[in-house]
Image 1 (cartoon, rainbow, N blue to C red):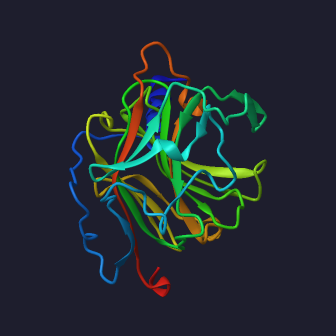
Image 2 (tube, rainbow, N blue to C red):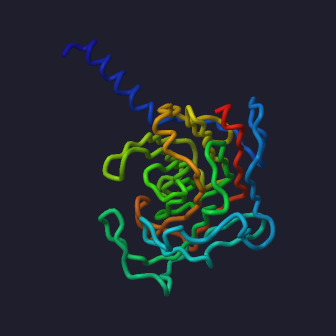
Image 3 (spheres, one colour):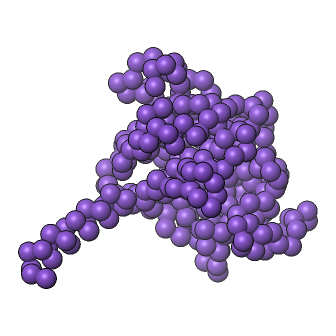
Length: 281
């Protein structure tokens, strides 16, 4: 191959790589919720700023809808879901919960349940189709944690799944966003983007997705990142979604090690959902 075709090939390869790995240095900071910019006809349909000292059980439930375990190594306890100082604080501890089974099997993989953490969801309390979903979040700093902000269909089907924010704390400057869709677990597609921005464990940042009938787009601090997803057929697969906020230990994020700091806290300042008339989507 000549030098010119090789150079063109390398350029095309680099462009393809950059379509899923986006670098940005300047991202605005949002201290409190702001109105959607240049958007008419939207209104807030769900909001919690976690004031007081108890979780609002009219809006949230503790635990996954299917139980206290999932695809990682922590047993999810309501005792590890705290509301204090105007924050939702999910606490991960380096200890085994007395109610935890020794192991679980998920997706053909066996996990030992050596840790305790927490999760909240809006299942059966707030569910929605289309909207702008956002939360102001600070993630733990050291290895072994997998904080996430995501949605699932209320009927229990999978796929679909909208991942608004996933961070593996071994790489706290990398944001993972995804839309899983398709006919079944074994026959699914994923619109995945990996965005390297800054160390998200150092401060609070706002993560969001705008979900309409025609597109999905992901945002950090009000700025769209990466590319949009446009396939209307598979976008329509998501409906009546509920919100999940969980702090996983191990799993995809990798296990804690001797450098991991305990306890770890996943802190959420507020969560908000905007919607407009579905006929406008």
